[in-house]
Length: 239
Image 1 (cartoon, one colour):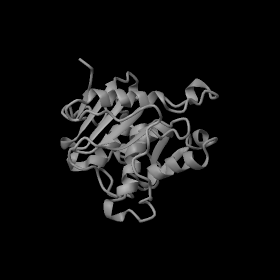
Image 2 (tube, rainbow, N blue to C red):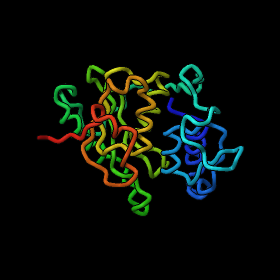
Image 3 (cartoon, helix red, strand yellow):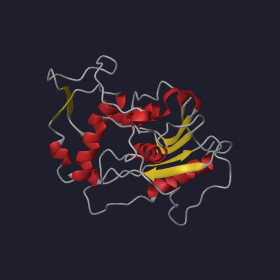
């Protein structure tokens, strides 16, 4: 799965200590691992600073260090390949479109936006602590839905819809994304999610599509790993 010692640490702190995670992760994280683009983007989303454990300085850019704790496909343990149910049911009254997502993606994108609005509101929390209304849908090369997810950032700051979707996919299958995979999202992926998509697709990236409905003007959605792949990532409109 798209995981390393650094991402496991950050997500584990948010899972185990949600009330104190922000304070705990404002400290420095020291690692002997080579920082991947996903690691660096996740630090910007949910932590403060990543340092080299041996020098105390900033972790060099990916490719500089040879020390790594990133898992490869063959190193994923059976415990990490969780036994998950099949495709989760859609919240009522939503239904899967009857058209092909490959030929007519817009009804599927409309469903993705509807899923975003069907997320838990967390209305009892301050506005900055609520989950943003974002959802993502993963489809195979034939346009059949594999999974869907909505943003759960109010629960765990790293739980963006796209990252949850990819981590669930790998927990269930233990495999990278297959050629021709289609990922739909209601909002342009941020740097963390874009890095996760690139990592998950690997050499198959140029065979897949990432379609989104709304641009995100925030700085964390600018100059992402997908922005250089114009043939992969596209903003869609109904026209």
